[in-house]
Image 1 (cartoon, rainbow, N blue to C red):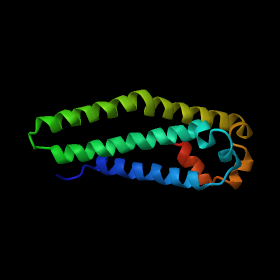
Image 2: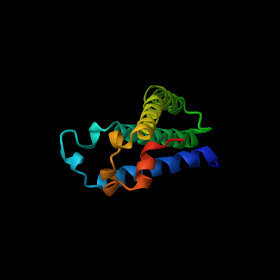
Image 3: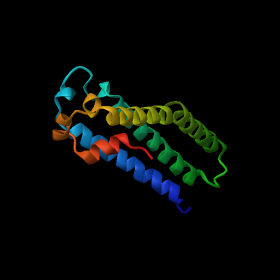
Amino acid sequence: MALVPSQVLRVAILLSYCSILCNYKAIEMPSHQTYGGSWKFLTFIDLVIQAVFFGICVLTDLSSLLTRGSGNQEQERQLKKLISLRDWMLAVLAFPVGVFVVAVFWIIYAYDREMIYPKLLDNFIPGWLNHGMHFKA
C-alpha cells in the first residue's frame, strides 16, 4: 500500500489551497464587509471549488487505498460513486471555472491592471497570495 507520487501531490495541493483560503479570509478588506463578502468574487468561488475538488481527490485516494483487495462489493460500489463525483466535479466545475478565472484575470490584468486589481489592493493582499489565487498549473 505505497503512496503514489500523484496522491502525495494532491495532498500538497489541497494543503496549499487551504492555506491560501485561510490567509485570504484573514485579510481585513473593506470589500469583505459589504454585501456578499468574499463570495461576490469569482476568484474566491474558484478557490473554494478547487479546494473542495482536491479534498474529494484525496478522499478518493484514501478510500481506494483502504478498500484495495478487500473484495467487499458495497465498498467498491461506494468507491465508484466517489470516483464518478470526482470526475463530474472536474468536468463541470473545477476545470471550466478554473480556466475561465485564470484566463480572464490575467488578460484583463495585462490590458489594464487598475480595472481588475487596483494598486490599492497591494496594501491588503500580498503578491504571493494574489499569484496563488490566480495561477493554476
